[in-house]
Length: 324
Image (cartoon, rainbow, N blue to C red; front, side):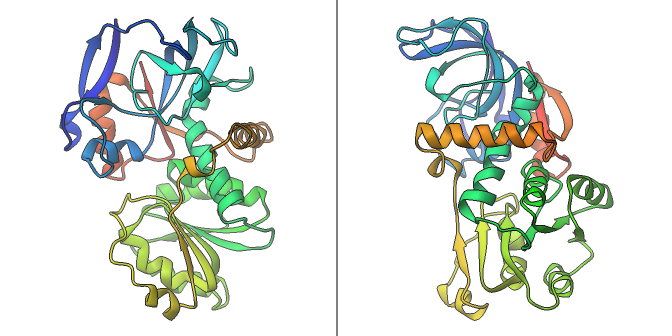
């Protein structure tokens, strides 16, 4: 029997059910893994709420680490006992055991423990593609990172610092400001008491920043527009503060001929070569200490609904891990 978190309808955290299921043998190209640590990401709330539609019933979560317990037909790249991790795209990571496509798994180096893997694989690969493949940040640039104390935010700050950028981070409290500074932020803006764009212009001598990384969305969109330099790029990659809607192209013109992109990881990690290169880069950044897992809280699988409430209320700092 496997214990899993499941949703049969969309809605608030209360729709998450914890149930026991009979897990079938792994199919062709699949392996069964015993899950040891589960990464929680804000995107999980989008599937639960219905913002990102999925078939029902369905599991939750795409990121986890574990140990291979059984092999399906045709799997010759893994062995029973291998330590592995996945960032998806298949849902169902909120579980004690699960069957996973072998092609979506990465073997873990000995120096990367299971909780760290669950905390950083999806978020770390997100930081990698945002900074290096999407925005192509160069040494000497000054960039803005919204939600700099969040799970992706802290990793992105560290990554950008390693690339040689000066990082301005926005946060919601003094405690989160300390977390952002610890991750490497050069400047921190408390968005509840400071005007983000005014402070960015002050820090940059009126120029604004060439890149804004905005994982918040609707509530920070205007600040992002006003903070970008002429011909700057806004990388809008999340909806924690609501979706960005009704964007008029003329607005981009009025704010200095801006560029905007709404990217997702799976469009940058398409081929085997892209996936392997990104994960290798992530493990290298971990090894040199440029980024840290930053696990801010741990919960049991049975507390999945409580975790979602905390995420949506902005009460978490850094990465959140569920333990089966």
